[in-house]
Length: 120
Image (tube, rainbow, N blue to C red; front, side):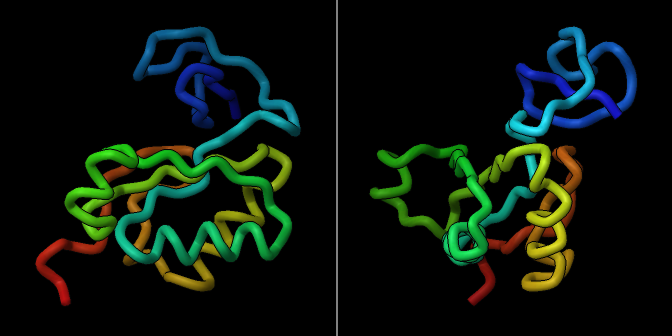
């Protein structure tokens, strides 16, 4: 397993297919994409990570300005955790929310079901 420091994802191979940058072996403190979530689930997940003592960086795609105008239901948030805690963070997401609220795990941005704005 290799790590792309620019994309902050885990992958196979010596070159990142997204940014074409050189990959390397991941180190314990490297921020890795753990999961991508949308809506209120992302706020819940961030709180749970903090309660479990797992450091995280939550980055929304829309940004705070747009989210404050349209609300957080349409926001998609990427959660980055240290490589050493990645498996724990992914397991928490699966146990708490199942696969249906996640768009990708294991550092990949695979397409998958996410909360749709028309739900609820």
